[in-house]
Length: 155
Image (tube, rainbow, N blue to C red; front, side, top):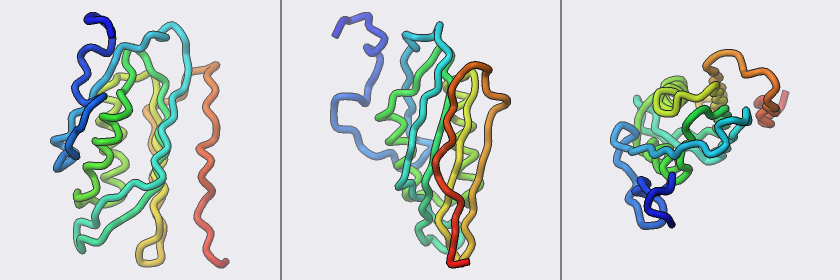
């Protein structure tokens, strides 16, 4: 890899990296978007996201779908995986986890647009879905449905 490539500043990719102890300590990394002149959508699907209930310490599980239209920056996927994995021992309500992830990515990447869907599995018989987006999606970009059906019990 060339010394001056867009990838030369990455620290976590290509080697063993410890799971961060908390989301606050996780280091997100980014690279310049080599296709910044094109408006396109990037999707990360996280079907096994876990965090902890801040009251009981019991595990909570979610299926996250993160869509973003990059501007100058792309998030490096291993650093995103480690950041999201750091929630495994983090206590917060579903809403806080979902919105915190979105806000950190928006602050870090300054994308044209970002949307997150947090589809949380039921606890206490109630599923909680959390949705947020940074604004209107740019025109002309294909942003498919997130593909996660609403929770249906036996009803």
